[in-house]
Amino acid sequence: MAIARTGKKWQWFSLLGVAAAFWGQTGLAAEEISLIYPPFGTFNIQVSDLATFAKTGHTSPELRFLIQLLPSDQGPNLRESLTTRMNLEPTTVSQFVKSPIGQSFLERIGQVIRADNDVNGGQALGEALTTAASSPSGITLLSVLQAFPGKSVRVNGELGLKAVGAFTRAIHQEQRAQDFIERLAQLQPKTPLPASGLYPDQKGPFQWQKQTIAFTNPNRTTGSIPADLYVPIGITAPAPLIIISHGLASDRRTFAYLAEHLASYGLAVLAVTHPGSDASRIGSFLSGVPLDYENLPKDWVQRPLDLKFGVDAVAALVQKNPALKIDTKNVGLFGHSMGGFTVLAAAGGTVDWNAVKQRCLAAANDLFIFNISVPLQCRSLGLADVPSPLADPRVKSVIAVNPVSSLLIGERGMANIKVPVLIVSSSKDVFAPPLEEQILPFTWLQAEPKYLAMLVPGTHFSALGVSAAGVLPVPNDLIGPNPQLAQPFFKGVSAAFFGVFNQQNEQLRPFLSQTFLSQVAQPTFQVYWVDRMNPQQLQEVLAGRIGAQPRR
Image (cartoon, rainbow, N blue to C red; front, side, top):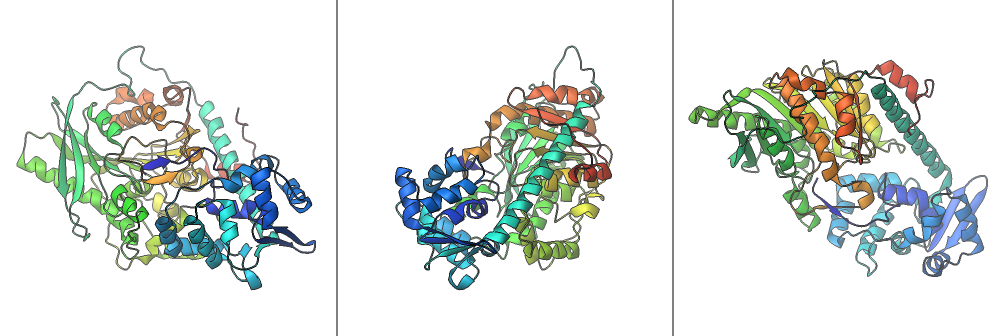
């Protein structure tokens, strides 16, 4: 993703985005907010009480009572949260509200936030968001509630509390899983590292040259696909080809820092821009150009095929120019987020579309699903014809960073991957939750060797380099520590992984260890590295039947 920082105090736009805001705080303000919780009755708050509190800090008795019901860490932040502005253009909000994903999102929230006559409040909430976005104050919690149509906002307190309880349980399970990974990593024996010489997080010995090429995916109607090809200079044997697949709202420049680093280790690198889900297309959407929802689902299957045709394009270049030393039968893949799915599918992860349909139908009817990548994955259901196969037998290894694939590939699909796999997870990733999208899928892998790295306190954006101007307006809290401080880890682990499994350089194997990786991104980040995990043991941990070492 190409990102733009938008501010520091965004407590109400966090794990569930707008959903968390309205589940956690909507019942405290509006024209009239009615919190309905039988058998205790209905609690009402007037908008004037809330507006006065936001302006002066004065609380009415009714508001004071409800503030006391908030968790202790939320009460002091409520006043600021009411007027914290979300920097979104009115056209962006309107596009989202009208989109299929937005409609599904609002309808789920509308089960808790009800409109007059106790009807689903999703449509009313969409109108309120659109109206607030065009107001002088923009979208704030207060402005949205003031714009909510009708006389009152009715909050289903019983259902809301159930949602809060389910969310709390999900958070506890996430923490147990991460603590378990930390414990496993710390139990690993120390690996002796070379006393001297080049470490893989340092720049390699080769210079490189870059050229921009274009190729086509005949299954697409979007024209040519641009890509940057990095070729090491002075190598004596053909270089393995590493392909980089970006995530949503990024492009081929996002991981330029990594491409340059890998090229310095004698690897050829092809960084691809996937049309339709790249920074340019998402930027147009945020400027008011509607997304093509008919073709958007096709990106899930076209992206792995982009990589396949990219390898073909490089092979054609090598055939025309024998001096170009690239081994296109020895391919490694690196992908982030949606690109993580892309590379796992290209490496052999199969998609059972009937199973995907069943999972997505179940998710659509489940109010208590807090994985916000699910609606994105379920957009794949719009596919009519699916090209097959998506896998490329030339792929020999794969690194998937913050992948979103739990619904699409699933347990059986992950078991079909036969090449070495590294999955990188970030402890503070709210867009691709670690437990559901990386930790559980890691246990489904049957391939050996397989590795899981947990970056703490990494986020969904920690792997990103400098790209085009920020496209997605993301709060600083969700971006986390400066991503540049995580680059030594991504450089080091990628050079070592592809060095071992594509270049057959066993001298780099000691660097695929907790000993090396635990220190490479310090002091800002810690890395926990495991190469095995018992699925049954993980389930015991999640259920609380096996303790996990508390995080220090």
